[in-house]
Image 1: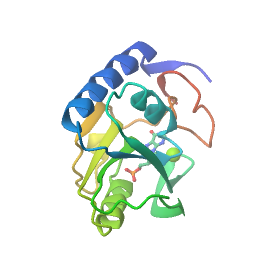
Image 2 (image 1 turned 30 degrees about the horizontal axis):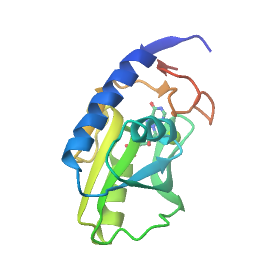
Image 3 (image 1 turned 60 degrees about the horizontal axis):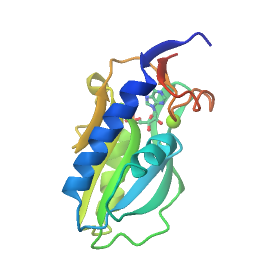
Length: 168
Ligand code: IMP
Ligand code: MG
């Protein structure tokens, strides 16, 4: 693949540090559960939590709404949380928000379990693709409507290992 770098490793690192600082401040004394939405968030989550200084716990949710590079519009649950989130502060960690369908699904589904709070932190936001409005508490970068890979994001399960975000 030709490298068409959209966001460099250095820029990602700086932005992740800034977001971690905000979370350290906002969630102090709340022992939040950070929920990584698999698979795309695994690198972002790993980098983010290593910059957190507050106590927190980690869980995962595995969902899929995409087949290769086109949105199917259908969300599938591959595996659920292992933890009880009732009365807990939950911070969902996502790689990218595109149509908002996945995020809306998570809000509706986890919302019924009575968490103390339910917020989203996303690395990338394709604002212009939104079909459903979703509240995002922390967002790394706004990007245009282009398919991107790297830093956890895939095309056909490839390219997740790239240390930067690139256009495909
Ligand atoms: P949404 O439900 O349309 O917001 O889609 C969210 C999910 O689609 C993300 O969690 C990604 O897994 C996937 N996705 C959306 N855009 C891209 C992209 O540009 N590259 C890789 N995956 C993407
Ligand atoms: Mg994906």
